[in-house]
Length: 183
Image (cartoon, rainbow, N blue to C red; front, side, top):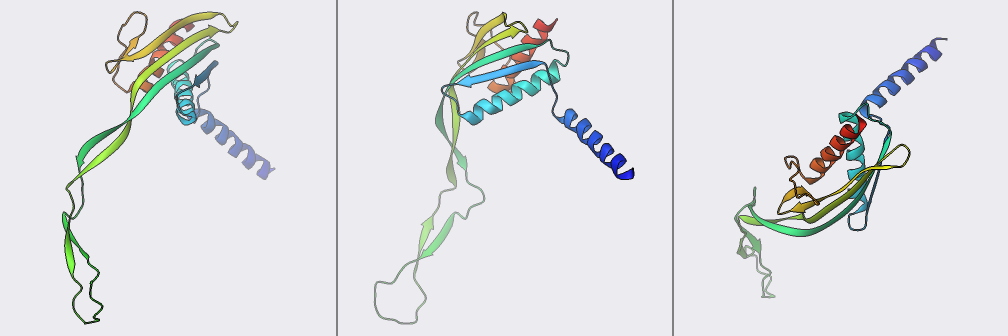
């Protein structure tokens, strides 16, 4: 009887902690993209789902469908290179075949104190979304775009808060729409 009780206690704890770390929601999220990587799409999906579950715990059943279109380019930024020996030396292979015991000659290597950091920057970003109720009726539909570094509503050009980055701000916007439509 004791092993059964212990197993039941372990299962109950796992269930309780599992639900606490992975909130559930009656909202389904579908994300697609022809231009983003599958990893980006998966991360966007997961963040959207968890944000809606956290911010709208009593949401009505609905489906949020998102179509992502984005373009990226490599941006280089000069930066200081730390830690690095600025002036080092390297050994030079002697040109003579004379095997004389001498110290091996060296030449200075002048390393720059600067380096170039490379990162991917999103240069174009469009999110088209629809939100459907439980019966499949579309109750909201719009697009968000990146305009001069700001996330805006494509139709009205109204600025969307951009304090946390494009993805976080988009996901928070979608969660706010779900909250509004659930009331």
